[in-house]
Image (cartoon, rainbow over all chains, first blue to last red; front, side):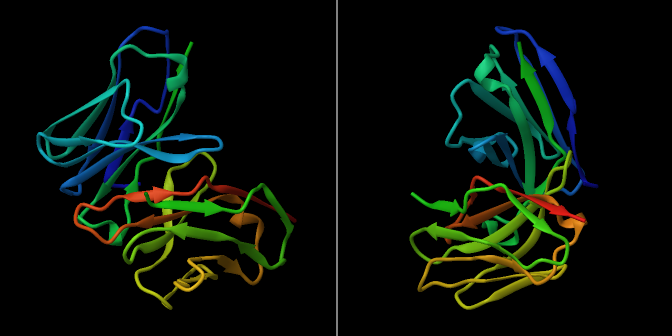
Length: 114
Length: 113
């Protein structure tokens, strides 16, 4: 969607290597989220951010870290990739502290760990 | 904790058939409810939402009514089209500050010409 972009769109990496996924927004929204999508699980929250340098863990945060040094960028890092982290990763943004407005999602990053 | 349960899929329908996709939820307080749609190769898009009991969300011919008594938010469309083929996710947000979306597992809809 316009206003939120994810990079890269596709990546293949080897087990044990570090990987960083980027989410960039031009909407100046304060709230940003990282989800992973897996068959049979739907979307599960990895980490989220309520502002610059203000982040917290979601339900599946093990093996992942995040950083937010600027409002527009939210980075997801896999410190040492494992095959179980093969997934499609989605970033989302929200203008509100409550989710009542819903989220705007990026187009996703398909990550394959071999 | 909060959870969303969607009917098992996939669902295959012929064009112009009636669609119902079931969604029930478990939550404390008064959640808002959403349906998102994901077309092939794309991210999720908000399809419709309802923020309080008895509200009806509607968009693109789809409808869903927030039923607190049955904790349900079933998605319906009277006449599906091939272009409706996608994955549909039911979701809820709790009513607290700093709330987040909780998603169901999603269901794939395929519509045959």
